Amino acid sequence: MVRELVGRLTALDPQAGAAVQVIAYFDALVAQRAGLEAIVRGAAFLARCPARLVDDERRLRVRATPDGSTSDSPEPAAPHWPAEEIVPGGPARVLLERPSGPAELDRMILERAAAAARTVLERTRTRVREPAEILLDARTSENERLWAARRLGLNPDEPARAIAFPDRPPLVRPAQADVPQDRRAGVGPAVNVLDLPSSWEAARTALRLTAEGTEQDPGPRVLHAGELGPLAVLAAHIHPGAPADPDTRALDRAAASAPWMLRTLDTVAAASSLRAAATALTVHHSTLQTRLAQASRLLGWDVRTPAGRLRLHLALIARRLHRNP
Image (cartoon, rainbow, N blue to C red; front, side, top):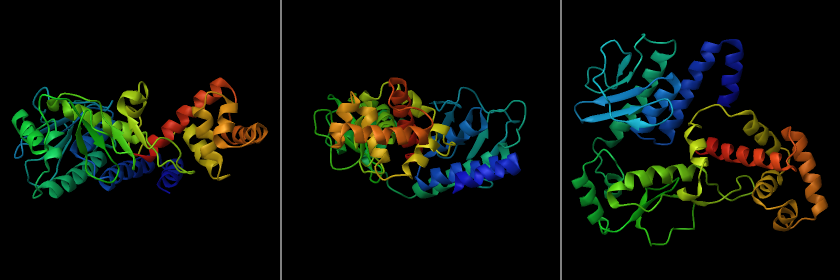
């Protein structure tokens, strides 16, 4: 519904359409209970310039660039950069590194980013942080993370990994421990205990590429970050709230045409051959050919060719990324 509204408004008034997209972007982050880093990354992505969150009272410093990477602030903020206080009159603020002065949508981006950050700070102000949360937060000190590791029963001299779930707190396990297989999960690489924030970041990326494993959401339920390869680069460029690309929209239209569509296409994209796909789907080869001919007409490209199957695979990956912000 929101994407349709954005499309209609953009056709009538590009500025209004862009404003609604900004609102939808940050609303999605709040609904997903995203953290401050995700909010600052979102501001940088939408503004197409580096963004910062600065809270002197809590000694928080978060900086992100439009490509989604985060870093410490390299120099003090310039007084003429566009900024918005997270709480009126308070020390915390969101800024855009815009030396030339504010752009057209900067005020809307800053207002929505500040409101989203305020929600996060209010949620965490009085809450006692769990040891796993401390251990996975790169902004906490090494001593705090080592304390958290001991509370979790981890040996600081042995590798561990972070595991991300869509609907429950993160899990930190020794590298040799079994990974839960009964629910969707993204599994980070095994690293030194003090490097677990990087494992957590990778686990969250892997989680975005998982699926429920159902007819309407086919795909792997558990995925290890080490299996992603270049797909991690693709994930870094498909941000929450970003408009879907034409191939993703084509997949959604095709999915609405037949209940077998998505599982068939996912199986074909993953199989070594069309005959292997037919076997996995327990359908006759000719039945699969008929299905793929229909799918090709709806999608706009032939999924029976090697190039078409590669394009299909990437479209399915992009669809998961859009569905799992």
